[in-house]
Length: 303
Figure 1 (cartoon, rainbow, N blue to C red):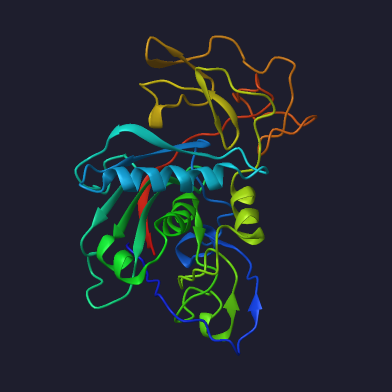
Figure 2: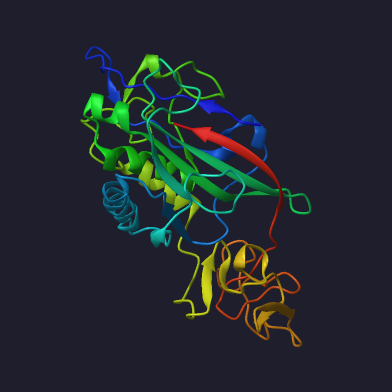
């Protein structure tokens, strides 16, 4: 199901108080009721830029915007920009995270939406856990030019959607969110663009850090990646390029571990804290326990 969360460029009303609204995440949506935290499986998320006459401009802005989020000290999340050209256009379900300029956003004729992120989630029915598996960003170059909006600021907003943050308020008060009409927030995740907001605010950062706490207790090996539950081996044959519980990568194929990987080590199954045992079959070699991947998909489109 595709949800349209439409953002508009609006003049802030001076009579309304400027406040910091609480961050909102995908788990706050009715579709994900019961979920505690929904984010990427791994802590490193890479984006491609579609080839275009303005691709270099978009690439430079994307690097600057990812750099803003990467400078957040309370999280291990890393947003990266691929070195090579991406697909000609974003394709939902292709497993790639693509950022592209368009001359007009689909389905927004006559509106004032500057950009949107199309985020795809995958559900693991065995654990009832949702995870982000793909995110594409479309930027309307015509409206961007007409409004004089900052491309970097727009991308910072959309990247936060790609990481799992929602708007702090809703233009129509839907989805249980506060009504934007009742206040003026200072958050980057306000759906109304404002050049007075120059980057992530305290609550925006708190949302990202809540979704991606620094769970890897030590630096992962070059052939491993930090996930929501610790370091796990990367492998071309693994789901999402990462091996599952109790597996290691053998010649590009995930194979079962022959010996229990945890040994005498202990850690918390949720966050890898000391003095708590792993679940059976969990990999505790890095001080963190692993968890299985998901299936079934759901898309959320956010502006």
